[in-house]
Length: 126
Image (cartoon, rainbow, N blue to C red; front, side):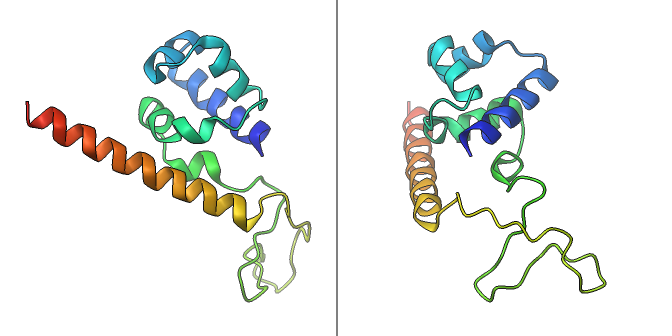
C-alpha cells in the first residue's frame, strides 16, 4: 500500500514540476524523509497527506484509491467492478488494506484537520 501511494505522490509531484526537495520543503521535512515516502519505505505519508494533497492540488481520494485490478467489496459482499453484464472482471480482492488500518488513517486525518483549523484560527486572530 505504501509503495502504491508513494508512486501516486511521485506521479503528481512530477506532473506539477516539483523536485523532491521542493515538496519536502513545503512539508517541512527532510528530502530523505520525503524520498522514503515516495519509495514506499515508510507509512509516515499519513502524517503529511493533507499537506501533500494541498501542495500538489489533488484530491486525497486520488492518492488513496484502491489499486487498479482490485475489486472493492462493500459490507454486503457486492462488487463495484461490474461491466454491466453481471460478470465481475477481476475477482482479486485486496485484503492488505485492513479495516483497522483504514480506521487509523481516517482518525489521523481527522486529527490533522483539527490541527489545521486550530492554527488557521490562531493565524486569523493575530
